[in-house]
Length: 107
Image (tube, rainbow, N blue to C red; front, side, top):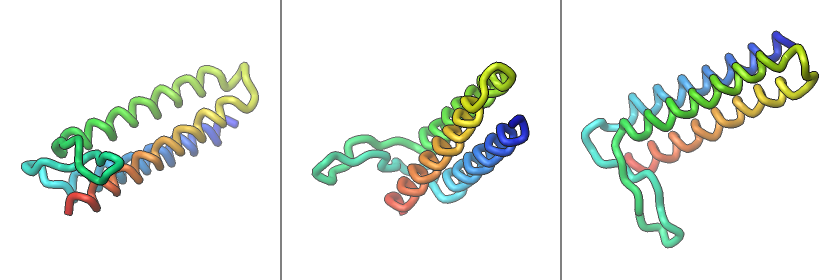
């Protein structure tokens, strides 16, 4: 079980590193980026490359917190730490998709 927690955490970190690389390499640091659209298709929230990178860093903090909790619970609980580590992978994938959509909308 300890190996599966570490492997899932490593997968989540690799996905987050890919999202960070995508944001850093494909987005311009000087332009205003469209980060959110309303239901009518109008942009309502703009930001910079730093905002996107901070989103990835916040996701990394969540993944790290999940990993620490999973390690603390691995001896007491049975399956919950593995579910928590799997959730970290899911969060990383969602952040990768969000960064990809931001990159595609701003090119």
